[in-house]
Image (cartoon, rainbow, N blue to C red):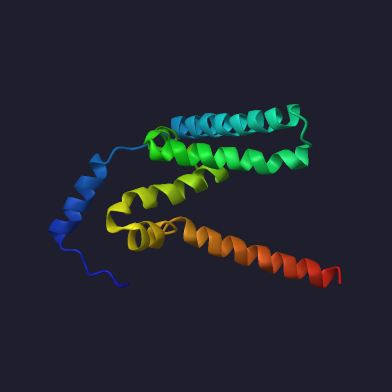
Length: 151
């Protein structure tokens, strides 16, 4: 997209606005993201350890652990808590499994007024859709390469 030339007044305003834009504290943001992301992962490890302690193997416990973490992410999103965690933690809140649940539930809640088909169904994967498409495409390509190499 070609941008139109800015007038002198527009340039002056842009410079003025940029000079007053709050600058995020990079060190604080990194530390908070690290701690919150680590806490989410520690919670996941705790859930995994629980399933192992009741007699499942580590491999068997992976599925139920993923389900519990997805449920927690979706539930916290529905209650509005995950949004507050995301606002505070930034990138630390997008730990893959809970962040993925949030990226599906948040648009579904936002567009539920438009109905279950055109609102929830059509918009649910608005954010997560590209992740799914590229993730599955990459998995398919890697699987094909693995199959060709080990054929």
